[in-house]
Amino acid sequence: MKLLKKDEDPLQKFIETIAAHPRSKKVILESKEGNSARVLVIGDFLPQEKINKLVQEIKDKYNFKISYVEISESQYVKLREFKNYNLEQKIIWERKSAS
Image (tube, rainbow, N blue to C red):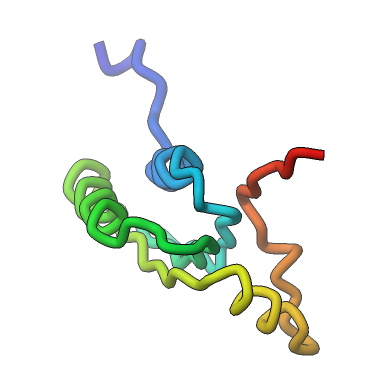
């Protein structure tokens, strides 16, 4: 049965769940090493309890630790303005804006 089941990516599961929240804007991968990843979640007024629960579920199910920091869009803009800190290259998910 396991052979038929495609391996799930815990980081992808995290991204899909974050993307489902309408106030999330971006997920930036700061680093990924072995069974852990560090990410920035950009959005305003995201549900901390739900994100913490998701992180714990992923740790329990996949033995994969996700450390995250949530920042607002305005904080993101300020961070992006710093020289030598190119966040744009590390974006792994971004909400498409309605044009």
